[in-house]
Image 1 (cartoon, helix red, strand yellow):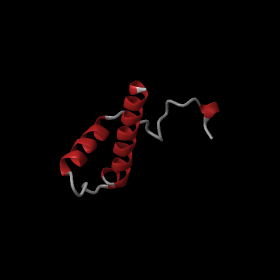
Image 2 (tube, one colour):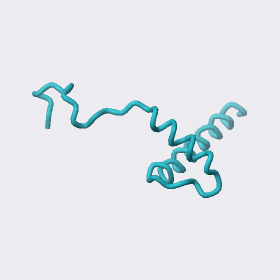
Image 3 (cartoon, helix red, strand yellow):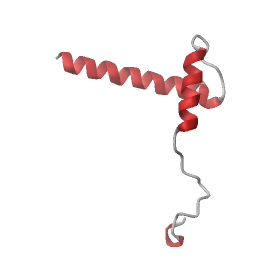
Image 4 (cartoon, one colour):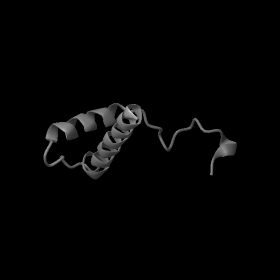
Length: 64
């Protein structure tokens, strides 16, 4: 029972961080009560690998 409670708490914390990121730093705004959290999220988002939508790595037969 303790394991399930800890996992659920972890899931809720991660969901709260994702919602905070989408609500503030993703749109270029500061988190009102925790600007340090917004700065940390922005730095992590800048380091995350992303796919270039105009990349030439997609084979010609698979383009839409």
